[in-house]
Length: 371
Image 1 (tube, helix red, strand yellow):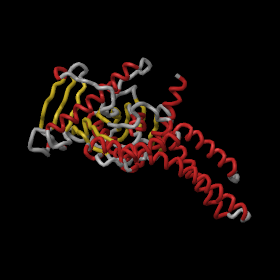
Image 2 (tube, one colour):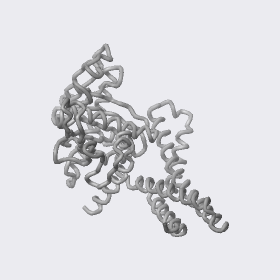
Image 3 (cartoon, helix red, strand yellow):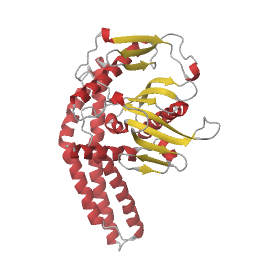
Image 4 (cartoon, helix red, strand yellow):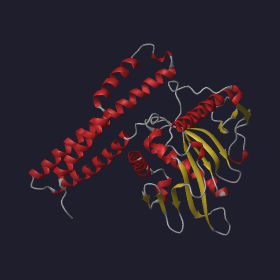
């Protein structure tokens, strides 16, 4: 095994970091942090809790981004010192092994930060996800629930708060659809590459003959709008609102009042349901926000002539897959766009999907460059 060329590796790390700094602009970040810190220290900040939350969240995100860049620069300096110490000691094997491990760690963290710099879309810092079952009957509904757990576990791994806004359970098992929010910097930017049709191949646990079953589920990713966005005004005449009783699996009642809300946008046929909040008024407000977000995404898609699909037009069926999850006759999860694949299917379903997300972001940027 050839010895690691540390000087060349360190030069490469510094070059990558400089490219990242050119995009992230630490000077501008420090100015932004100073401005937000001044806003956060205002004595009347919490007179408006919603505005205060936005200021403190923006400050935390900006500070975290700056810290990541600064700390990586310091770690590269420390690595260089560590390598020098090992060399001075005549090639101390233990110190060199420590340097090798740190090199791998820095390279990984730099790669993640480099991917972050590719997320410069208008809504990349936001998030809401909808998953619905597709072709495949009860297996598809079960697969939809598996995907929801996968994304919630991914968020949990990263410490991202999540809120389940609505779940519609299938009669036998699994989900017809689910909507949940991930509150984290660049959440939409990361998870937007997950949008599309996911395909599962396995021995069906619902087939008493033990036959192999192929099923599909669609993932739709929607950036939640904010007050600063272009307003999507929806006339009352274009909205149909139905109220119903919130329920859990098997129709078991979890609410004694008709607080859940189903909102239909008549012109487009888009339907949004909310049952997370305790009151009908709160669920109605949440449903309207998600409906506005979906309509905003549709409008942006219509404005972009190059975009071929709308978020609401994903077909959960054959011929439209972006990722395949095979559990039988072998085990493999493969992204059909990037060719990224993983043999440990259990880890993937347990939320270990960073490799798929990062390769998807790079693929999308490369596709945009070539377009």
